[in-house]
Length: 146
Image 1 (cartoon, rainbow, N blue to C red):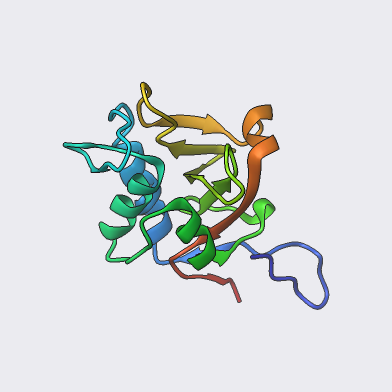
Image 2: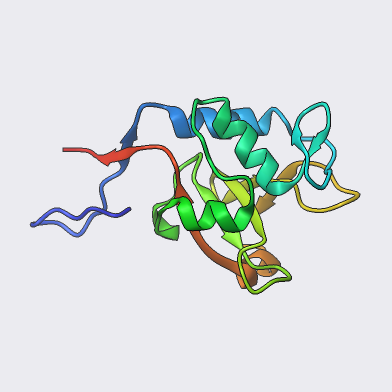
């Protein structure tokens, strides 16, 4: 979230305990793992929300299991204030959020896209994902620098 100083319009960069970075790093280690509907562990494969659930669980965070429930429960984050470990939510083929990815930095996110694919990087500036983007959120704590 952007926090503005009373005498400056420059957004402050969040300071974290490293949880978000660890979530993004752990997700990156899973690149190449096969997609599997309902999958939530490396040996079985992942669907998008299972990847989020697994990486957050590894940091001691309890998150809902579906993309829609994750989007409802996450603390909202502005797209222009994303940091690694934040979640990116999409509406691809449903009225509610039905896809989620983990922001990795530099406009990239990690996700389990669909059957026949593997966990991989994608880009927020890809016209397909930009069109379906609905918001972002996080389950870990970030605070503004003093």
